[in-house]
Image (cartoon, rainbow, N blue to C red; front, side):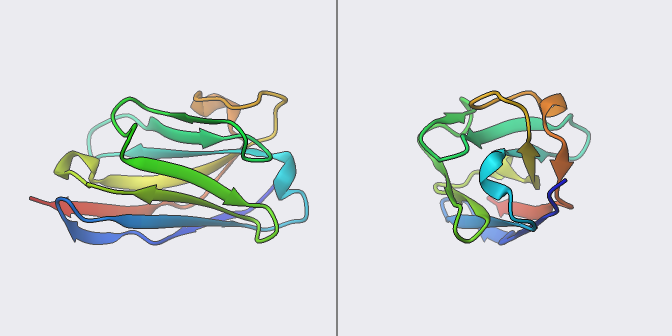
Length: 125
């Protein structure tokens, strides 16, 4: 399995931007579709964005569509989540995850076999 480490979280004000990064170990990063999920206190983990193995297909939750962009650099074994126009409701721990299945992209947490430890994003109003 691939090992994942997120970074880039922090405390920001509403309207600000953040770019999250997720670095993967191993030489097979390009064989995984990747996703970002988030979990706020007292809530279930929810899908944010996903990207296919070569980056040609992406999917977004309605709550972040138009404000977030997922991308990947397979040469650097890294997936990114650019978040703009942040809102207080975006406050959560953000996790990246790797999907080894044959699906182009998936939004289902159960399809992802590897998860990072998470990075906290806090948006103040």
